[in-house]
Picture 1 (spheres, rainbow, N blue to C red):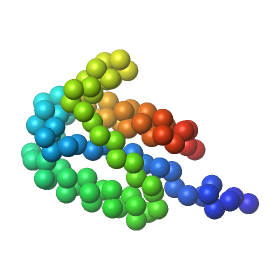
Picture 2 (cartoon, rainbow, N blue to C red; picture 1 turned 120 degrees about the vertical axis):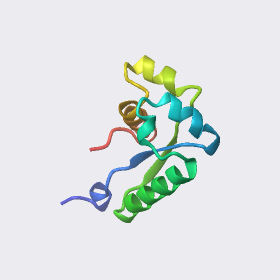
Picture 3 (cartoon, rainbow, N blue to C red; picture 1 turned 90 degrees about the horizontal axis):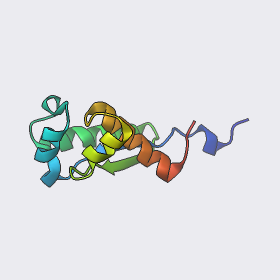
Picture 4 (cartoon, rainbow, N blue to C red; picture 1 turned 180 degrees about the vertical axis):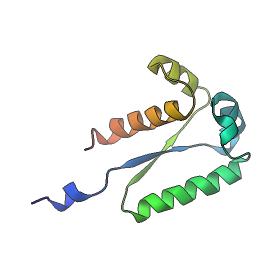
Length: 102
């Protein structure tokens, strides 16, 4: 029988962007043209996604993306500074904090 702790949904990381960093990150992300044009539009979308994940019982970890360090992290990991880079960056941050999850 599973313990209650074992049946909880995994921690989910979501990328988080400071308002001042949004214009720079749109230029850095290779898929920046697919993101909302303004930070306020992005924030609304991100908060709705976060609320939905929490409603399903997930712990949500916000992972801030810094335009100064993110491109170098992506280069060191051999990934692009776009969707794939964000996914890997978030996964690494969640693993650093919570360890491997099943």
